[in-house]
Image 1 (cartoon, helix red, strand yellow):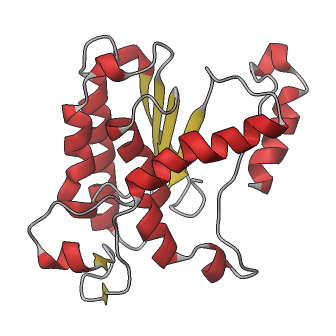
Image 2 (cartoon, one colour):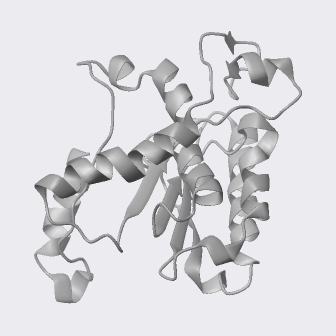
Length: 219
């Protein structure tokens, strides 16, 4: 969040060059002083992931770490993504607009990793909530790729006329795991194709590889 604020302040000093005008960045996290508390996996799974559609009990009952299939995290239960998306677009937005002047026609949603999966899910299932979406290093492997299928089923007529999407990932997400790197690249390309092949969307969707970055630095 601090890095994003610093980048915005720097770019906004020269809008004619950067193209960056006044904007507000809203960060959403969980309380705590340590990273393990702020990146609360239990709450992230509830908020960021929809109910599982897979017939696999492994997916329905727990979120498996894709980097270690032998480790079932049974306390990580998905299911609250729709409620979280509605909260972002109603209660949170209303609270912000009560305090600050905001442009209702220029709202963007970005997320990283599981947050990236949520961003892509919100795009596919609640496309009118935001105008622009940026799933970064998204965990699109979850639930056997159901979010990609949701994107494939999306009716572009439901999107805002100002719709744009940026799908980005590091060129080496997990340096020691080439299989994971290949999986995440495959899934990101599939998400891009699901959108870019729809009528009128090719020029509104970008797939960007972040050279020299990893899963942790692609945020």
